[in-house]
Image (cartoon, rainbow over all chains, first blue to last red; front, side, top):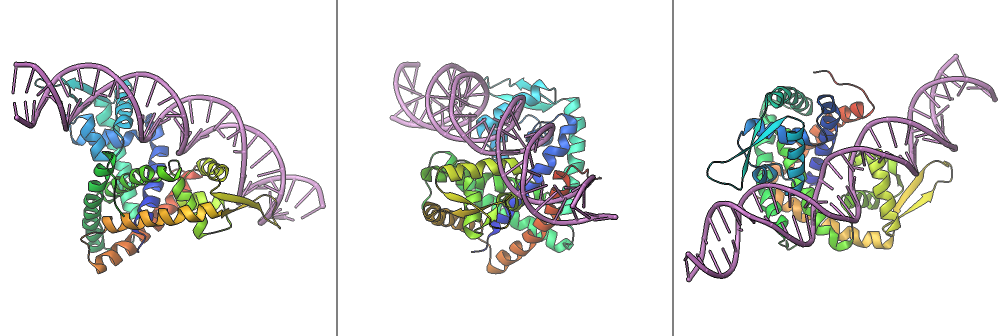
Length: 150
Length: 150
DNA sequence: GAGTTTTTGTTGCATTTGCAACATAAACTC
DNA sequence: GAGTTTATGTTGCAAATGCAACAAAAACTC
């Protein structure tokens, strides 16, 4: 069995660690950059969907988002037709910081992909998307309290 | 810029989340499976190296390992020639649980790689190793307090 | 081999994380 | 449309996480 997932774990932890260190400069606490980029790119998204998108616990997302709001990076707005949901939008400050996050993330992407040809980048991208889709099915299944069989 | 790293982050969080839920059955707390598998596969490793291998903060590793010891999954042994280091070894209980972890991890690998051909699995494996090597350089650099330029 | 730097390990503290458990609006069922 | 189930959001804990700061052994420098 090829240990794909161990490699992925190492890469993800290393990157997350780097980002968290680098974003302290913008007063973003651990993990908050994840939420902010998605809110900027998907304005109006609700936190439940955001948690699914990022693959993080609902309650963790709730608290990170609350903190983003308190610190003025995003706004929560009521929906006209649905009283229950709160749509998320970036503030101007959030938009501004977004550009720094993108710059950093793009740099990390470049570093990570150094030495790969364009075709290889294309291939790994496609394959990773497949892997992600494969695994998110199980994630949702297990998160809902179901038991996998193996 | 291909968003490779975002895919990797999603996959890693989903997998980690699944594993943590599934390993509670064996009284392994969040993240502990990471350390245990590496100790079984690299008996005698010291915690500093383990932290580097996993790509986690030294102090986080220290505490996870302490808990693994308290709960009887591993032993810490003194080195004959070096008073400072403590070598880590699995106990019988640790070895036993290791097999369940491997079974689970192998299953996750299988799920993740469903629909990929053997060649594709080989390719993604090779490419991920390259990416991991690329990024671990930066991780060590930033963890030591250096600043990246971008 | 004295002095310096690096390696390895620890503890204190503030923060994030996530499961359980709850609340209520919305959607669905009959 | 009353009753049930699902979707969305929250709060209370208990635990993991990670930075700062410290300690001491080991390795290096001259």
